[in-house]
Image (cartoon, rainbow, N blue to C red; front, top):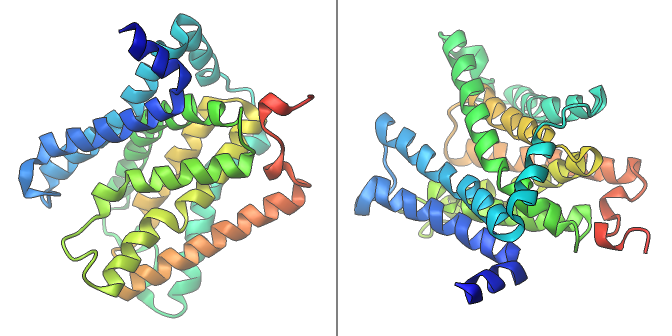
Length: 281
């Protein structure tokens, strides 16, 4: 046991990411069995809950194993840190819906199939409520780990941009089991859709999340930014497939990377600011 604890303290990030993948993917396999990713509503709900176990449980376990009670006190303090300023709240809450709506409305000029889902549904209240509830659940439980544990420790070694890219790529890879389909590696379009969903825009959005956390040291702000992302996805995205879906994914990714570039230019290199451990050295 002492050897295991020593390894975890020496390699806290490796421990966290390994636990996140093992818990989420293991829970999914237990939930759905050998038949694979489910298609009915009841199984999808179970799949979502199983997935959320990974980052949340791994974050809590890693915090306790690495930092003990002091780590939990610090985690709670960041979770309750809500005085971060109106500008930071605006960035956290509006980045996802504004960028998503802008992309869909622009594409809808080419085809009505890109009209935001909230415009075309007959039950707007239910869609809004479901989007908000889903966002709250996903944002809270996922960010207990990604931002609660991983991001602050990665900032001790890496810049904002590097931290966002690394966590974003791992965040995308973690979603693999949710987007993998039987023909994902047999056709060019299916493979492009899989890679696009996992790696085209998630790293860009994560860079912006790390940037917000860097300026607020607020876990709550990061959670709200994730809540906004999930809620926007549920409420605004139409039921696309095939080529139109790939088009939307790539345009959305391009817009978010433009936002990242704009932040980098406006911030005078803040995204490349040195690791926290090196500041002031």
